Image (tube, rainbow, N blue to C red):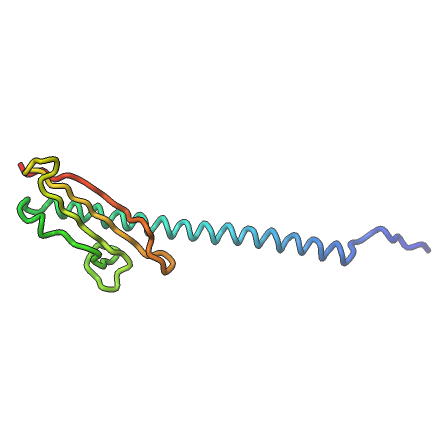
Length: 134
């Protein structure tokens, strides 16, 4: 009786296939981790934008004469924009009265920095608007 030596799979072929599978799974894991990091960064950026937008809306609701008192520098705030010494966001509000030489116009700039993976982002999310007294 003759044995057929060409049938079956050798140990080298199985190990090669397993190695290729491991490389493919590693690549998929890397893509998954990158997408999770990008999603978290986008969430932080959106929250910073919402904090800035809400601050601008609060300032619009103030009496025009009291706008100058709303200036702040590096105030630690939480995700809701409320002052919190342990907040992940830092908000600065700049008030510039007399915009373009008009006493009834005030330029307001709200800048929000956020910390991502233990590092504060170098450029803030920033909203600038002009408030009219009239």
